Length: 182
Length: 182
DNA sequence: GTCTATACGTAGATAGAC
DNA sequence: GTCTATCTACGTATAGAC
Figure 1 (cartoon, chains in turn red, green, blue, brown):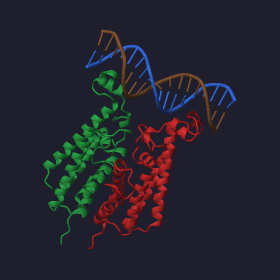
Figure 2 (cartoon, chains in turn red, brown, orange, blue):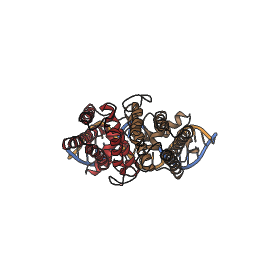
Figure 3 (cartoon, rainbow over the protein chains, first blue to last red):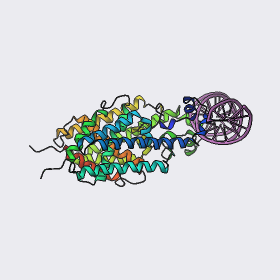
Figure 4 (tube, rainbow over the protein chains, first blue to last red):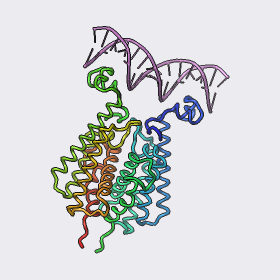
C-alpha cells in the first residue's frame, strides 16, 4: 500500500511478505475488505491516541495548535497508507465498519471539546462556533498535509513547499483568532 | 470514474458507454495511461481557464478570494473525477506527461502573480511572501474541498459541514491579512 | 474504423489434502 | 493452520477479418 497506493493492496503480495501463501490469509480475515476495515480501525485509533496524548500534555495555549498540526503531518509521513485510508477514502466501494465509524466519532468529539476549551479559556475568539472553528482548523491541517504528501512525500516534516508552512499556518490562525482588546 | 473512483477506469466500460467494443478505443488512444494523461491535461486546462476568468473579471479585492474558493469547490463538485486526478493523484504509477506539467506550471504562475498583485495593491499584508501566502491559501481551499468531497459529495456548494465554511474561511484570511493601521 | 477472437496475466476466493 | 490446485472473473492489449 505504501509503495503503490492504498487501492493496490494485493493478497498474494501480503501473503508473500508475511511468509505465507494467499489462501492462508483467509484463516485470519474473511475477505480483502475485512483487512481494509481492520486497518481503518487501527489507523483511526492510533491517530486518536496521539491526539489525546497531545491534549493531555499541553495547556490550552497556542502551543497546542502547533502540536496538533505537527502531529497530523508526522502521522501522515510515518503512516501514509493509514492516513490516506482514514482521511481520504481512496478505495472505491469501501465504507468503514460500525466499529470504524465509532472510532471516528470519538476523535471528532475529542477535538471539538478541546477547541471549545480554547474558546472558553479566552485564548481564542474565532467569531464562529467552536465546531466550525474546529472544522476550519481540520481543513487547514488536512490541506497542508495532503498537498505535502502528494507533492513532496520524500521531504521530512518542516521542509518543502507545504511542509514548511506550519508556522505560517499557526500565525494565520493566531492573527485571526486572538481576542481583540476592548 | 465518477461512480467508482478514478482508479476504477475500465476500458470495456468506457467502450460500452460510447457504443463501442474495447479494442476500438485503441484507434484513439495507444493505452489506458494515455487516456489518464489526456484527462489530466484536460482537467488542468479547464481549471486554469476558470481561474483566469475569475482574475480577469474581478478587481483586486476580497471578492476575488471568495470567488477563487467558490470556484475550487464548484469545479470539484462538477468534475470530481478531474479534480481528484489533477489535485490528488489517486492512480498508482501515473505521472503527468510533460504537457500536463506545463499546464500545471502555468496555473501556479498565474495564481502567484495574482496573489502578488493583492499584496502590491495594499489589500493584504500576510507577513509572509506572496508565494507562501498563495500556497497557504491553496492548502486551505484544497482542505475544505477535499473534505467536502470525501464526506458530503451529495450536498451542493455552500452546504454541509465543510461546504458551508467558505465565508468563515474568507473571514479568517481577512482578519489575519488585512493590513494594520499604523 | 470497427469488429470477433483470443492471448496473457492477475486477482479474489474456495475445495480439500495434510 | 497451511498448503496445492483450481475456479471464476476481469482487464489490457493484440491479431487479423471485414
